[in-house]
Image 1 (cartoon, helix red, strand yellow):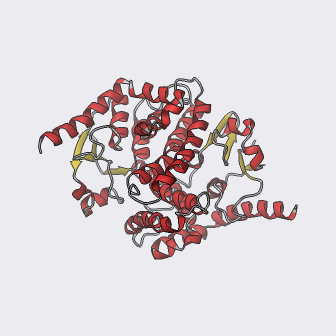
Image 2: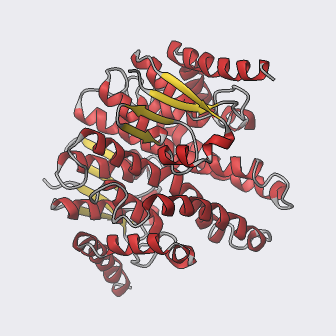
Length: 217
Length: 217
């Protein structure tokens, strides 16, 4: 039995790889683990059956025998612990790579989620245009600090790790904002992530789902 | 040599245990690991010496021999991996507890951080009063879902774990908002966390730092 993840039947990002199943697909591809996908509709995501797997009614989930997981950080970590390729073996390097996983999902993603909220949930509020520059400046604070730490290194700490995988997917959320281009080393870092064959395979797989769903209507 | 963490010389929360060193102190106390604390001023946090440890100029950091870590999730996980008491041994239960760690720091903390930003960074903006109800409703969404999952259980998944430790500290950030009281089982859950002897010892230790700093001025 292959592990099974859930993904949007019809992703709201129209196959741009911004939905969070992309992170898990990419991790599977990096370690060479085949997986199955169960597609869920927005309607199904709010139902008790899905809430039993994911209390917040989101995707992805991960099922493997009797184990059910949610939170992409936890799923990627679970994959990384069980397969070579996403975490260094040396204990201190491993601890630091795990640090970058948490950093991506807390310190860096939090202000980026604020921008998503401002642009979507609060798109039509009267304050949003005046407020957006403040939101963007808070992201710039974090990007500037991250850019300074990365410098001209290829990845955040030695070889590519699950920390880079999550950081790249978090930074990719900024694609349409133009913010990333203000930090050329971060833009190049994201491009390096996107150029990895495992990223391409994962991207193509999620795009194929959206393309098929669109053709069906 | 004991592990060394950094903490605010003078915490902006005036010793209420909201600064993030509280999470790490609590984890140390749960597992019975003594630790040293190096206090840093706001000025020092922005200097290159501290940025070398923490690229975002924040506290806490964790130093143990040649290992330097930041991100409370990663530090608490590092402690939990090396000592009994914060993660179950059974592999599936352990994976789920790690899931709750990521859940606390991503799904639950992100909207709560938005409220902090609105109340502090944007306190004097002309839109803040009108916008606060939207921010609070986004938190209510998550709290309602978390409350439904917790039900009448004592902890999120079996015995107390690092997932509960982080979730309690994240939910405690809502103390002054009154939001937590709308979900009695979550308020009771936080109170259970705060009643643990290890929490009390950690709380008293961080309060003593603030009290001493205040007496010195």
